[in-house]
Length: 117
Image (cartoon, rainbow, N blue to C red):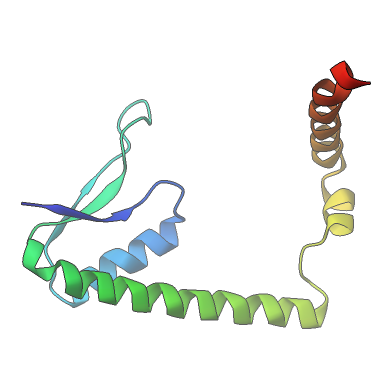
C-alpha cells in the first residue's frame, strides 16, 4: 500500500523538483497527486513500496537539513552585504502593500478591542 512521504502544498517548485530528483536518484518508486481543478485536493508525493518508507524519510530529513543550511548561508551573505529584506526596504519598494497590511492589522486590532473601550 502506498504511503505519503511529502505534502507539496505551499512548497516552491525548485524544492519539489529537487525532491523528485533525490527519489529518482535513489531509485525509490513514487507517484504524485496534483492539487486538482479547484485546488482543494492534497498535492503530495506517495511512496509505492512501504518497506522503503524509512529510507525515504531519512533521505528527506538529510535533504531538508542541507537545504536549511544552504538557505541560512545565503541569508547571512545577503545580510553581510546589506541586501537582505527589511521592513524599511519593503516600505520603499512596495508602499501600497505595506499600507494595506498596516490598515488591515490595525482594523482587526480596533474591531477586537472596540467593545472593551
